[in-house]
Structure formats: C-alpha cells, structure tokens
Image (cartoon, rainbow, N blue to C red; front, side):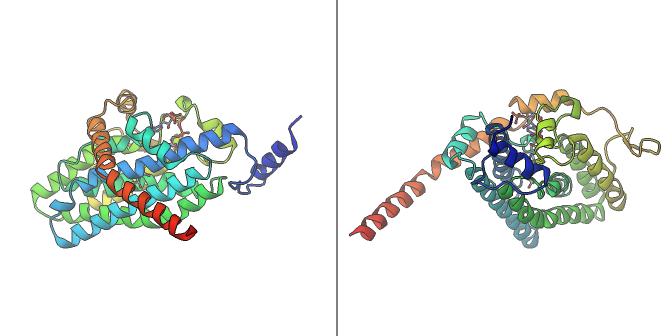
Length: 311
Ligand code: 3HC
C-alpha cells in the first residue's frame, strides 16, 4: 500500500505536474536526477575546452567574438545545471570533486580533438544540433528546476547551432581546400554526435524508469532518428556529405536506415579511453588548482564581511 507521500508523488507525475525541491520524492528519483543533471552540467563545462582551443586562433574578429560568446554560454549552462542539481542535496564541491577525480561521467562527444577551424562549424551544427534535439523534450522534465533550466538553455542553443551551420556554409562556398576541411570535420564529428543520444534503447538501463518518471520523454533511438531527419536536408543545403553510404529513407518504416553505429568506440570513450579524455580532465584539474586562490580570497572576504555584520 503506497504511503500518502508516495501516492501524492505518483499523482503529480500522472498529472504531468512539476515536482519541486521541497516535495517528497522517492530516493531513486532523487538519485537519478542528481546523476543526470550533474553529468549534464559536467558536459557543459568540459564542452568549453574543444571550442576554447580556437578562441585565440579564430580567422576573424567576428568569429572570435561569436566563439567567445558561445563558450561563455556553455559556462552559464553548466552553472544553471549545477544549481539545479544542488536543489536535490548534492553540493557543488562534491560534484567538482567527482569530475576532477574522474569518477563522474560527462558527454562522450567532448573527448574528441578539434584540429581545424572547421571543427567549430561541425561542433555548432552537429553537437549543438544534437543537444537541441535532446534538450527540448527535457524542458518538460517532471523535476521543476531541471525543466526550467532547460528552457533558458534551449534559447541559447539555437544561436549556437545556427552559427555552426553558417561557419560550414561559408567554408563550403570557399576554396577547394576549405570545402575539404569542412567535409573532413563533418566526417569526424558525425558518428560521435549520434552517440550523444546514448546507447540503443535495448541497451539503455535508465530509460524505462526515467520515462516512467517523465524525466525522459522520448527514447535514445527516437531522438537519434529525429536528429538524423533534421540533418539530411541541412547537409543537402550545405552540399556536405553525411559519412554514411547506407543512409537512406525507409518509406515503410518511416525512418532513416543507417549503417551500424560503432558502440565499441562509444563504450571505450565512456571507459575513459577516448582520444582526449585524459587531456580534458587534466585541463579541468589544472583550472581548479589555478583557481584555488580566488576561492580562498572570496571565502576570507565573506568571513570578514560576516564578522563586520556581527560587530
Ligand atoms: N556520454 C557519456 N555517457 C553516456 C552517454 C554519452 N553520450 N550516453 C549515455 N551515457 C551513459 C549514461 O549516463 C548511463 O550511465 P550512468 O547510469 O552511469 O549515468 C549509461 O551510459 C547508460 O545510458 P542510459 O541511456 O541508460 O542513460 P540515460 O537514461 O541517462 O540517457 C542521456 C543518457 C540521453 C545522455 C541522458 O542522460 C540525458 O538526456 N542527459 C541530459 C542531456 C545531456 O547530457 N546531453 C549531452 C550533453 S551535450 C551538451 O549539453 C552541451 C551542449 O550545450 C553543446
């Protein structure tokens, strides 16, 4: 027989209402939200590194300003999401320690290198494009602080995706070398961007429960398919090839047939053995250590302020 609180929680979920921080919730609901929201926040913060690599080397002042604004947005997305996770009882320090210790997950996509400027276009178009497909449904997540953070993040993501598309369009209208650089970047980022949506539905241990609790509104494969459907016409407009010879519309199934995704690569990256995992954690650890004096100074200032207030 469910308790009064459980019945109330179940009624909130059934009515598609919002669960707020002070509401009673099952421990497992709290745990899976801390898991997902903290990983999402880590993804935003680590996601600053691949693009940060090109801020000092952007080809024009305009591109530099746009890229700086985008990386700054990612930092803000990370802070909204860490704050949303903190409403569930985990502290910012605990989450930072987990990331720096290498025990926290963050999106696999950020463990790939960005060797050319065209990578900035491929990341905006593919990575932020995939993030939009994944994040729009999360605006309706049953946990209030998470859904509300998503609304604000999604507004900024559309600019991120458009500027990436525009970088690729500019390159595709340029010299043969620029066209080749753009195609090469899409060849490298296309498959990892499909992996962002998570493992296939039949290998997704969290999906069933997350869907029952209306955290996840569509399955990993459904969103992956939606993303591919969005990419095909845009790739045609860019006159860029999506690197999958078997990609074709299946009228009967009303979905795209694709080549097999290399899930071995995905699980290797999740195990920390991707091309850039060690470098991403090293850089994040170094930033944390370099910033220690700022945290100490702020804490000392706050201590003096509180003494003054008392005096
Ligand atoms: N990278 C790393 N880990 C991944 C992953 C990926 N691309 N996809 C799945 N995983 C992990 C899951 O976290 C889970 O491990 P855990 O139980 O230890 O947490 C395991 O693989 C099995 O996957 P499931 O499908 O069972 O897990 P979920 O139900 O959590 O689904 C998800 C995975 C779709 C990524 C979901 O967690 C989600 O929607 N997260 C929030 C959105 C997000 O993180 N988006 C990617 C970040 S990119 C970004 O936001 C930056 C952008 O602004 C540029």
